[in-house]
Amino acid sequence: MLNHHSLWSLDGLTREDVRSVIDSAQALKRAAQREGVPGLLRGKHLALLSDDHSAPAATAFQRAATELGAQVAHVRATDPGQPDRRDPRDTAGLLGQLYDAIECEGLSDQQVLQLDLNAGIPVYNGIGGLDHPTRVLADLMTLEEFTGQPLEQLALHFAGELHSPAGRALAKVAAEVGFELEPATTEHPPSIAGAGQQAAVAEVAHAVAVCSPGEGGRLPLRLLMAGGGSAQAMSHAQLANQRRVLQALLVATVA
Image 1 (cartoon, rainbow, N blue to C red):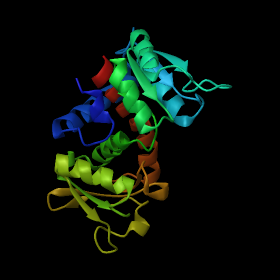
Image 2: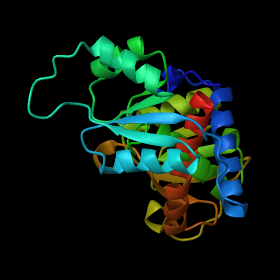
Image 3: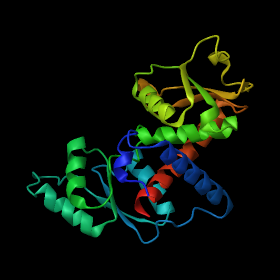
């Protein structure tokens, strides 16, 4: 099993961890297409700690967990109307007795750390959000599907600033897994302007893919070219893969 601390950033994930998560997500995707998502978290009770349980990140977490058979309880992060005078350690201890894991949406890093120190169960730092660092694994899963090559044989050209959050996430995984990551140019790979069209991918021993960062340089990536797939097809697959990777991460740390 993965240590949940490994999911707070990408720093704690090894090459084997990345491969295991993507393989697990692919297995979940195949199962969902055949007979449905297996109930790997049946009997588990997860707390969704948030002040807005209708937010996209919160609903993404709930959907992913409940599809796996888990029960998700909505818990407010703050008590409206008056200051919260409870000792945070007592709150963390109580949540740790009631639930098998806690997802924190909209909490500060310090609040998440305080919960983690005293809950005694896995605590996630907004893992349901599209801009969470681990979501880059879903983007790589999509690129691997469309190029038909393993990540180690991927040459990924990034049409964005490598010092942006998305660029740093890619650079971290590239260094760990061993695929090439380069700034995109107009000459190499083929024109990004035509990235929505089908394009050849073979270049020497590598599969070529092009992506750019999302709004503000953040995740999720915009996948522009990989294999014979159009940007629209990749975007559709990316959405499905985001949920499967989230489920794979939950299974790896809770089941």
